[in-house]
Image 1 (cartoon, rainbow, N blue to C red):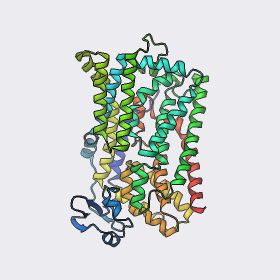
Image 2 (image 1 turned 135 degrees about the horizontal axis):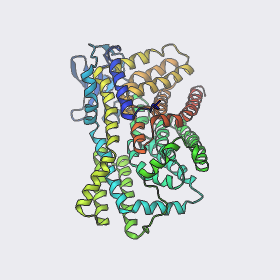
Image 3 (image 1 turned 45 degrees about the horizontal axis):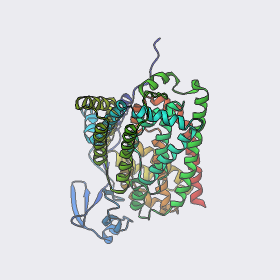
Image 4 (image 1 turned 180 degrees about the vertical axis):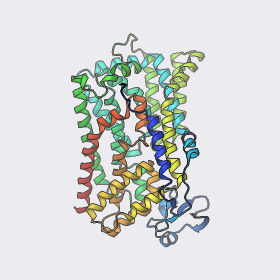
Length: 497
């Protein structure tokens, strides 16, 4: 009997898209009114069912709408997306998504996610060019000799650095660029590919889960809740430190076991395939000369420029892609690659990540089905009503799981914040706790579910590393359970102490 294989990431997402389309036939369509700030005219635009009206941009307008957010949060640009208006939910005509909408959804998703898809393809082209220069091979061989006997430092440094990026400026999608670079280094250190995958993805996830200055979650959510983002910051820093420590110890334990007993690897059956794909070699025949050093320096600087631009200059995918485009051209000149070889290699490298790009597009298509089916606001409405009359300890943990569930349907952290905070944060007043607790529950719930959420970044990440979703679940579920228990205890303690 032929062994049944676990489905590919693309198939998993198609199944999810089908289930979401079916849900739109059973969950009533509904909408909250929304309020958007018009910077050019210094006015508010209220959008409701079949009606759009312009309102004065003032604190009185916000108070009238029962929105407990200072007007300065809008005028300063801290809140730049339309927010939901409390107590305005109304049912609308059902818009179930049929077979045609289901078939169109991945195409719409690919079009809508074109910015990140082009970033991924350009990264693939850059990696292809780097590979033919020999710089990677020489650099990895040098690093392997330097770290001999201290390879565990790689795990600690990479996880901490990426967690810092996640907690400060929301380093998430950008980590896709790191896998092709770091995996050969970890393989040379005699770890399996699960270890660098964990360091990068877990590092990013734990950082964004316990965000401190992340403008896309902690700051925008606090603003939308009507509180200063520094309220509750100390608690989030403590959670970040302890959570990151838990993750590092978990990864180290697995890594040391795999290093000592390679057959204990969860992906041992793929060992040869993965090493062949990533060109694992610790004995480079090419010496690390000055030209290769300059190529590696240019390559690394692309990432420093990208990180600086995103964190300080408000860059996004267009600017990030441009950085890699300029970087690959400079590397081509330094390496003296002829024009024909350059183009052929770049295109081949980009094609290697085409499957990843399609996964990103299909995942976006799932979100489009929910938006077109108008069920997101309905789920939010019922979720907010489900907590009425709860004890505050039960309430805050219920909010943790509600946000985890909602993140399946609304994977965007900034989108979740502006849609839900005006509705959810006033619930804290009713049970006698601070609104920062709701902000924390939102961050922690979304972050914990992101470790396994198929509508998030994990499937795209797994496609790069050539690891199946079932293997990832086997590795990560124990850590998710540990982190969930830890989070529930700390979240409960925070509202009683």
